[in-house]
Image (cartoon, rainbow, N blue to C red; front, top):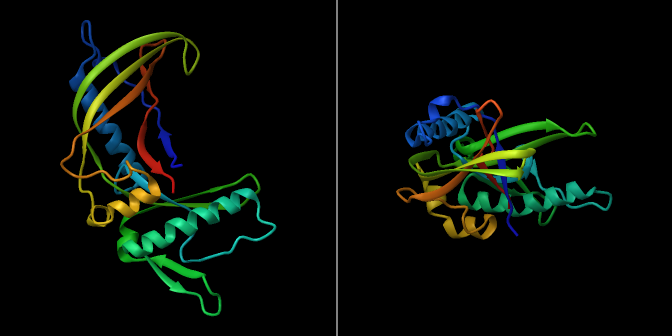
Amino acid sequence: MKHNVQLTILILVSSLLFGCDTYNKDEFKKLIQNSYDRVQAKAKIKGNFCYYLGSVKFPYTDEPVLADDIQWVIWNKGKLSRSLPLFAEIGLLTRQPVDGKEGLYHYDLTELGQEYLYSSYKKSGSGRTIYDNSFCYGPIKVIKVTDVSEKTYERGLSGYNETQITVKINYQVVNTPEWVINNQDKLKALYGLYSVLLPDVTYPQSLLYIKGKDGKLHEKSWYYLLMQP
């Protein structure tokens, strides 16, 4: 089963989004486009759609699963055993056999891989450094806000008497690279049917906002999508 991890950010929306009786769709379009652009610029990523490789630091040499590995390590090695050979085949990684160790390979980034890599790291509770790496593509261009609806729930995501604003948009993906277009079937086989987004195709998306007591809106939707192998 493929899992998409939705990463969230918090945005406070000013009153200019509101008209006399309805929400201003043009202002929502500007806000949403600015949000996509800001996240991409802040994270220094090539686009809003990211293929997660696993926790890995390049250069990397395959590590077999050991009897004393904790479950997280086993899961991570499993992801790497699927993702790294694929991106070596596509051309974003090099792959060389390890002398004297059948079935193990040494990986490093190619020039193309360096261009599309998004890398970050964090410390685990045990002090382990976790290096997260993805290949990202596809900046989003918002074409149109098609609908804005508001509904109040007695009990919502953040508490009682919560007002939710659903914004439906149409968007296109800009500059889908050739390595994605030419390897659609392989990428879909590992990352899921909807992991490849093509240029000049319009896609729908729903974004969710929560209206605060001060009237400002808190964004609850993803602005880049981390796709798991």
